Length: 121
Image (cartoon, rainbow, N blue to C red; front, side):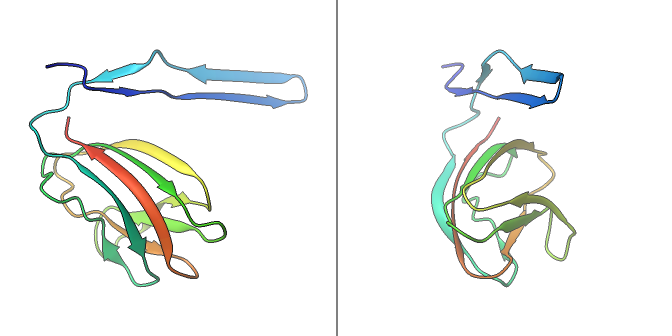
């Protein structure tokens, strides 16, 4: 089966007389294999691995920070530099490279609940 997942993305920015709309056609994704990771993970203030389960080929990673107050940072690997920040209630979606097998995250101030879905593609 093909096109098992659909990703929607669009942004509309208006400031003064500037209007920018960035959108793409719905991205249809072929999910390779039967493994995927979907869960809600408690993220503490000590760096911890994102629990990607049996997924070892990278793929599309989408996450929502369910915490009402605090933010979470995502790192490519343990001890790495923070490169994605999810404020309270924010969403991110990006493709993880197949060679990145152990992404980590860390909460800034207090434990946060983050829900995520990783689809190998």
